[in-house]
Structure formats: structure tokens, C-alpha cells
Length: 253
Length: 234
Ligand SMILES: Nc1ncnc2c1ncn2[C@@H]1O[C@H](COP(=O)(O)OP(=O)(O)O)[C@@H](O)[C@H]1O
Ligand SMILES: [Mg+2]
Image 1: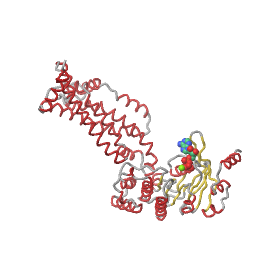
Image 2: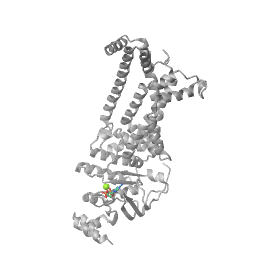
Image 3: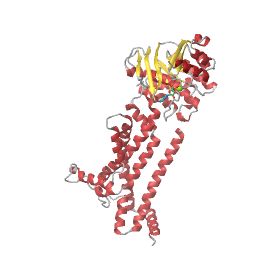
């Protein structure tokens, strides 16, 4: 790897994203520095996945900018990784799935093999290394997706609800992998709708609602006393239809 | 009329006796079609994938033309190749007319559009599923191309089989550029055509049955392999 400037900070300025004639991300401004994990929470359909995809460059904003500190688009892309809500496994073996992106990065053969072995061991997938990746259980595939990201040693890792519909054991394993990636020095930016998971992992919380960033606060403070009333309702599990109705009426200005 | 019974008896006789002439015809047929398929894949698979992946002006038009070329009339292809390869044609100096090479060239032209068009469809669908993941992993459209061809291998086998079917069943083009010369360019389809014109319907039907069973067994074998591999990869 040639030495490129650090990837972070990441700056989103007045980002707007529209699809199907609807404004789905609205004037979003935020900045991510290197450091402990940031967790994005919000109800289904809030725009969490869109937000991550905009950051990761999978979607281009209609207005506004997404800028990395590293001005080179190629090295910026190669220094980040993302675990999608539904990761796609290549129709190859488990180990080949970890191998593949390393090869794209022109990592040397010996190093590729070493990192693949380490990732397999870390994820507890060693005995499945030669199995076709697509026949793994959902939880195993999720672990593989995170292990694949780990092997890339990214500076920034995006994870989109990485433990949605996993059992507690698999959830625990995936969270351990996320910690391992953080321990490598990666900035974790993830979404979840699991509040207890947010409490376990987050250093800070971003509360997203209907395409708007309504609150951003240190995790302890956020869970103690969210400033935004919708965030408060969400944390209490009281984000009910009448609240939404009220919010809508308030918003119609 | 007992043509059918005669035909089956004739076919079995030829097969059981491993008739040398028959084996030569079958061997040449397979040789021509397999080599043609090989080159058609070499061109058609990356071409189809490139049309699916790369945005270039006229891409839609190109795809439509490719689809239309799937139905190229073999005799027209035969005629064009004939004109190109004949003594007075631009490639006349190579003296390829009435050789198996000429037949291979004609079949490559016939089969490449089929393989390319079907590949384009397969790769386009696969790209929808893989795009974000591959780009995120660090691929670009160029590096994604071989990845998608490999990951689409089970669906692409069907495209290759369709091409093989067309190549081995086709008679018009190989007749024109090959000339159906005994021991040189005679393949099963042209031999059948000849026997029919001579009135030897039994032998023609016999050859037809052999052609049919060859095609069925090739397809069957490939499908069995594909199925087993696909089941392994879910
Ligand atoms: N390509 C698209 N076209 C139209 N609507 C979309 C598209 N992608 C997402 N949406 C809508 O945008 C909203 C936010 O989606 P998403 O970011 O997936 O929410 P979540 O917070 O659950 O991850 C949803 O209402 C979704 O239906
Ligand atoms: Mg989502």
C-alpha cells in the first residue's frame, strides 16, 4: 500500500437524497472523526441504510457533498469496508470469499493466506473454510461478512444492522468481531435497531428519523436523557402512531 | 412403410459395428462444433458481460442487434463466409474454403451472438445482486467482469449449451463453406441431407437418431454436472 493521507474525517454537508419522487435524506450535516464507535439508531425506514450507503459511496447525493480527508477516490474506497444489511457471498468457498477482496487490493500471496487464516480463526469459521459460502447458515454468513471486513484492515467500517435476526450467541460473536476490528484502529459506524446493542457498542449515538438527523450525543447522555422528544419516545419504546401524527403536524410548516 | 424400423436397425447396425466412416463423420462433427463453441465462448462470454457492465453510447442498440443476430439464417452466414474465403475473396489466399476450418469459422459467427446475448442477460441480473457488494469490496466494472462470469457459471452453462445445440444441429452454413466432401468436411447434418437427397431415408434417419442421442447425452451430462455443482453452492 502506498502511503495515503488518513481517511478520516468524513464530512457530510447538506446531503440530500431522493428516490421515487420522495426526499429520503434531508439536509444532512455531520462529521466523523477517528475514534470510538458511532451508532445510528432510528425506526425502520428512517433512512439508516441510505445514510450508510451515501457515506460509503454506493449512492451519490442529489445535493450536498460527502467528502473524505483522503482526496483520492480509489484509495479512499480501498481503506473502507462495509457489511451490508444482506451481505452477498460469492459462489465460492468460505476462505475464497475472504481472499477475494485482498486480491483486489493486491495484497501479497503470503499475506493474503495469513490474513485469511487469521480471519477464519477469529470468526470461528476454520472448520468451514472449504465449504461453499452460500450454504452457510445466516448467522455464519454474517460472521463471514464481518470477518471478510476484518481481513481488509479498513480505517473505517460501516455495518448495517449486522445482527438483525441473529440469535444471542451469533450476536455475541459478531459483536466480538466488531470489537476486534475496532481494536485494529478502525472507526466503526454502524446502524442498529437493537437499543441494548447500541448501549454495548456505542460511544456516541446519532438518532435518525424520517431522513433527518434529530440528535447526536454521547451514548451515556443520550440514553440518560435524550433531548429530542421523538428520540425520547423511541428510547422508551413509545414511538407510537399518535406521536408520529403529532410530529407530522408539527413538521408541516 | 417401415422406414422408421429400418432406420433404427440401420442406426444400430452402424453403431454396433463401429462403422469407420460413421465414426469419422461423428468425430468431425464433434470436432467442428466443439472448437467453434470454444472460440464462440472466448468471444461471446466477455463480450456479453461487457455489454451488461459497461455504459457506452449505443449500448441498448448493440444489445438489440445482438438479440437479432441470435436468429441469423445459417445459409446467409454460409454465403458470407463463402464469399470471404473463396479464391477471389479477401481471405482467399489462405485456401480455407471447403476445409473444417471454414466450417468452424461459420459456426463461430452463428453461435457467438447466442452466447453473447444470453451472457448479457445473465450478467445483468447478477450485477443487480452483486453491484454494491463488489464495489464495496474494492472491485470496479473491469475487475467485476471475470468475477461475475465465474459466479454466473451455472447459468452460463445453459447459454453455452444453447450455442452447442445450434452449432451441432446447423446444416446450411457448413454445407456451403464445407462442401460436404467425403472424408474431409462431411459431418452428420450434411450427411443426413445427402442421404435424404439420394433417397436413402433409412440411413438418414439412422444418422439423425445418432445425432439426436449425441445431443441428448451431451446436454444430459452437462446438466448433471451443473446440477451437482449448483446444489453444492446453493
Ligand atoms: N431506491 C429507493 N427508492 C424508493 N424508496 C427507497 C429506496 N431506497 C429506500 N427507500 C425508502 O427510503 C426509506 C429509508 O430506507 P432505509 O434507509 O432502508 O431505512 P432503514 O432506516 O430502515 O434502513 C424507506 O422508506 C424506504 O422505503
Ligand atoms: Mg436498513
